Image 1 (spheres, rainbow, N blue to C red):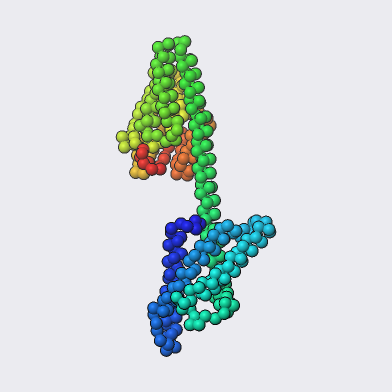
Image 2: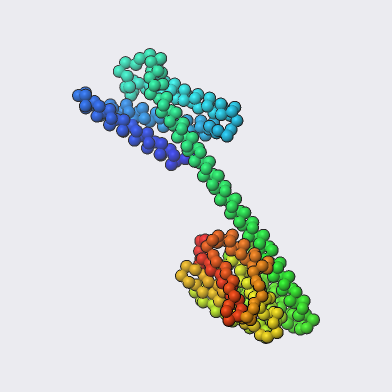
Length: 359
């Protein structure tokens, strides 16, 4: 609750002005009902002056409550200090309004003949005590609401930071994972085919450049993800030769979709490791992407035979599941299906968001 914020100043001013007008209407109605003469200007002057005196008083009470709020979780000493401070503020309000009546009575005309200060003070206490404590109560409501909003913002910020930290940790674990696997593939190849190992290093360099370039982003355009995946498949193609056949089915409408950085690589790696690398006969790997209205469907399918190896427990897939949960919550689906005709299908169903659009 910022005491000097313009919206609050306007709200308080409008509130007390409205109260002054309502009081004026009530006084005029009472006078009319009792047959008294109606002096609209005089009534407006009296009631609006009384109402407008509450504007600075309201902000003074707000400031007092903000400085010394009642907090039942606080120590008894602090609660006692808050009660004393607020009671003192209310007493000061009663005194201030009595002094204002004495000072401005000639200009405003609250009294035709000003009584003694003691009588004015007693009337001020009678008229203003309840209203002052009501304002103190409203001030507490505003303070508690502001603190609740602050705690909510802090909780959301903390949750966001924790999610970001977890995503960064998962990415940090995933990047060395595929790097070590790629280096192992190159190490296997270098003694058999130096030229192929050299081409694998070129693809690995391109893959690392892509990974480092997007290291600060959790999501990239699908077209960028497919470029990185092509470099990875280039490494595996050189390692496996004709045993790895690749088929693409990419819908052009899906290329601008945002996807988690390196989301396809562990799925493809898993398929190659379990369904193709263990075979002596050629195996096919199919990568598909399509947009379905506000959803993006990504699929990695292999033809690993009638009895595919159990899948889903490796670092890549565990991290993929965890990253998807952090990024999309429940608004995603990752399913692994054993196909009747043989092989395994991994399907990702994500919300479609165009690259460059606000998340």
